[in-house]
Image (cartoon, helix red, strand yellow):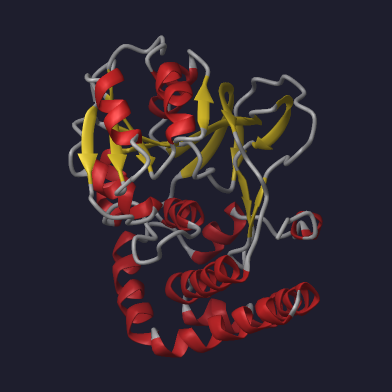
Length: 326
């Protein structure tokens, strides 16, 4: 890899006209020189694609002509990207001028690091945290690390269990070994959680670099459809990744988490309970897909289950669940 590797920043847009200028203006002000911006448009109808083409003609434009979802959108951009490093970025963000330079330095400093993620602050309350990476639990649940806490200004790199899908940096070669950004078979899901699990399975570390800063228009929210997708994909991840013996030995804890989530769903109301139960039933229908994923992930494995689980979180953050808006 060259001293100044080329980075492809991939921004996925769907009817996000109010956010386009803020996001792209901040990308144009990066102190890091060797990068391109790949603007993927998922069939927008609000004029945002036309606006971006007019105001930012130097971008690489990838119109998909349909709303493919986030992971598929990033993968569509990946097919047109020319960078050695890939930086997916949510469009409802503003990045600090040194955001990219700090992340490139942090990722390339050590080959054991598989991905880095920045400190993400709330757009409208810039002294509070949206996420400093994710706390990914051994059951596949994931929580924003430090959500709503005051920013202490620390810039020391921190080892974390997961990246935030809002912004991270990964080597192109690593993504291609995974077959692209995971989660392409789900419209809007926990692609960042699956990516983080696979990085640990491949023997890598994940780090948060608080010196790299992103401001994100974030709202913690849930609805029955999202709960169904998250729970189905969480169970698929565990079943397609862990060895059978690990699943047997860990079954008491995994089953306990399942029923805790079911209890949460019942508290939220009948639609949520139905969504959770339908996620369970979907696993039987998708058993062949789970088996295929097991075979693919076996080829990626460079670490034991014990290494994987040690890299994840063992404590749950139920407080975040009950902060979620409907």
